[in-house]
Length: 420
Picture 1: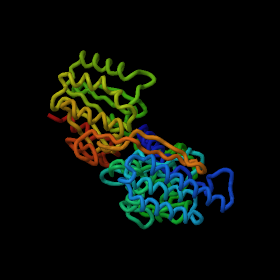
Picture 2: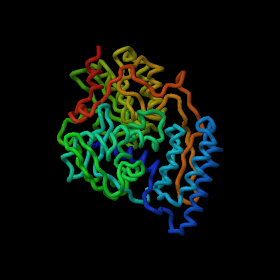
Picture 3: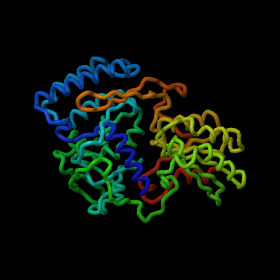
Picture 4: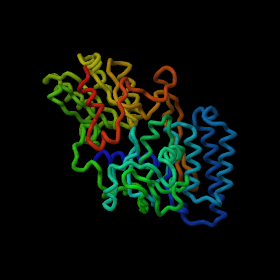
């Protein structure tokens, strides 16, 4: 239950807030005339253009300036026939085409949206409904095959065009929040109105779901989770904790969940590391596991006390130190995984990271004068590895399937427990 709430918060915040946060026909306040609305959008689009050209690092190598200009001119010319959320989406398409996860558009959460009453997560074997309202609990655990008349793979590919991402793994992580966003489904033609959408669901056939109007932070409030009453694996527990640990005595495995690259208000990470050292020195520990699957970043230096300890410990050898990564391992958490790989003999296990090892960062922002849209851009490029790999790939790739999730299995930790 906690993991879905966390995934929901992060997916909706990082994508809907950061990408499309408005669906009212006229979010500008106060209401203006048709002519004034067009002028305001033209001014905003021109400002977006000039600022990105002058501020985004390596702008000309990220996108053809002519293509950029022509696309924005087309949007300006179409404002009269577009609803405001369609202007947002089209602008985000342009910004997403830079292929930089940190370069994006966002607005304050001041208006309501239309949502389908299902929350689906992308796994290696499909798109599964993991949360829904009380009226649709029969859909929990089922796989979505189509939206409208389109196969789910086509739907995914379309929606990814409005997700700022550097690899497919981060785009997959962001999909849950945007799939339920009816404005996006309507924009791409997977439904013909904002009030409902038809899904083809495995085991349930064609199902028409009525949308609900809700603020993003209330979406799914009171929904039922497919995990209710089931065994919850470690990586889905204590999701809101910055970091925590447990000892699997029967396997002599010390498990550390590192969910946020920040010092917890309750306990600094340095103090947390001291606890770890004291525990390990007093118990028979065979393996140490650091789980970064739920970590979207923060301050990359926070983990240094633990890295220093493990680098100089007896666990710094093959088969004794493991770092788990996945498509939510991003930004500073990705840098942490790279640091462990470069400075210890750890094994990386799990799935490819959502972040790209060499990537743009050190973000800055500016706000468009009329709509209030904030644009985020990058002023620095970080090189951490040779070449230009699209992701940090694990030494042992172990996919998490929907069936694993539904049955409370963690194939990654199972692999580590049995590794010899």
